[in-house]
Amino acid sequence: MPRFLLSPALAVLLLSAVAGPAAAHTFGAAGAGLAQGFLHPLGGWDHLLAMLAVGVWAAQLGGRAIWAAPAAFVTGLVLGAVMGMAGIGLVAVETGILASLVIVGLLIALAIRLPLAGGLALVALFGLVHGHAHGTELPEAASPLLYAVGFVAASVLLHAAGVALGTAARRYALPLLPRLGGGAVAAAGLSGLLLG
Image (cartoon, rainbow, N blue to C red; front, side):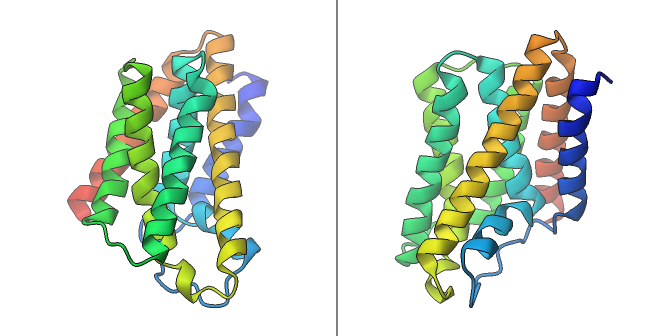
């Protein structure tokens, strides 16, 4: 494996190894603040993989999608968090989170190019369910605003890491790497759906 991919790949593997189960949503992050909010997306493989995958898919699409897809996810994330904090329920949030892994994983694995507006709407929907899971924890947090800033910042960094990985694969003509990674993300989401 080329050296330029070794560090990001190693970081992803290490983060995946320390991430907890898909139920990283503790529904009561009492006493949480900026640090806990920042660490939350890193603490569950479902959030970690989804945000990295959205970045990789954005890089795979190229052009405006490189910034627009992560921005759409983060917009949905914030909206979902506000909904969760306000007590506005969504059905099957955990199922939606795992389904987002299957769908975005397949988009990467099959190199599917959706029209930009449709792709952004889909990614925003993914962000909505992920954000709702975060938002249900916010009312009990000691500092909801700091917690939210933390998980949004971590999400942006995970998207940036995904974009960097996807861009490196494109730049060095290694299109098979993201496609294999996408297949792995889809398989992880499917296994979570089947075992959950």
